[in-house]
Image (cartoon, rainbow, N blue to C red; front, side):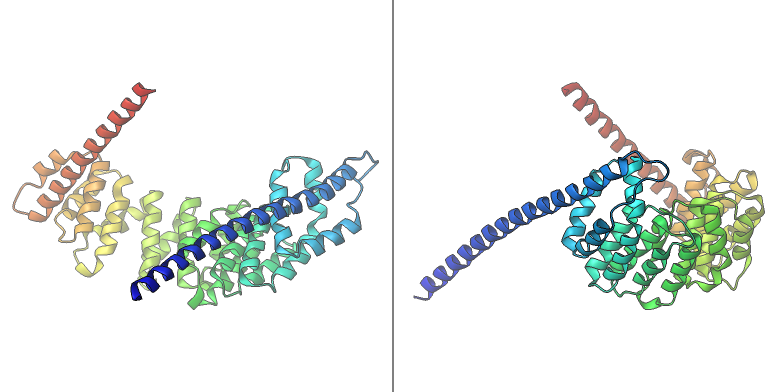
Length: 385
């Protein structure tokens, strides 16, 4: 009897799952049909306004009808219609001057909607920031009011809302508003975005990067440590004109070590003779507690020519720290030394150097085998075609 009950119960669960899948599939179909109907309804109204804008008039183009702006404000306040409008705008020719004029005249609606979605739940607020980043026409203008509203989205608790708001500001915000955004994020240390997320967002900025970097540097000490690292990484990826300020950070022992590491990486990307001696001093430092400075500096010295650099890297091959030896061997290879030549120079009883060179030789052999196998596979595919 107990087995029969268990069997009937299992069958009931299976039937329930089948019924749920069927109902959910029907719901998705109906939802897709509703979305298409919304998109078509919006398309008819937008096309009517685009035709109106294409009319030949003397002077400025005819304005979009006030009734259309009012209807759009009310309609797009519902997220389902905003999704349909997003799809509709994607289908438009972005280079069409008439379409750009339509979006320009729609700016008051977008500002109103920003205030509406600011009060909505987190997912809808985050989506509206994403929508603005893609369709906000006015960009990098100091007096654009919508930037101040989007800045308020950064105060929401949702991580997605913060990320999308920052990306939106990077898409159309001015340098001043972006600096304000980083200061706003600095005030919420517990809920702060990871520095890599901030750096990636800043790299999408399409305005005057030199002006942005100058302003961020002027406010550098107002940012939290995480955001200071993000700013330094952004500068490293964008400009080689900041060697002197980076050298000041590198020379300052009171600075956080993560900031000094960022400065070392900067000089690894942009070689600077003024930083050469600093990097050499770090590599020659045998203090085991400062191995990170030595390891990162050994990697940075790959782009600094000279026998003094090669000698310092060869000495670093005797370090008891694996990362220091690994980076030194990689940099020596960049200087043109083969592993055979390194073995000759480093021949002796130092097992650290021998183990690292053996490791690098084995790694290179495996990489060559993998590359040869990939080439063979590619050749076989080409022959098969």
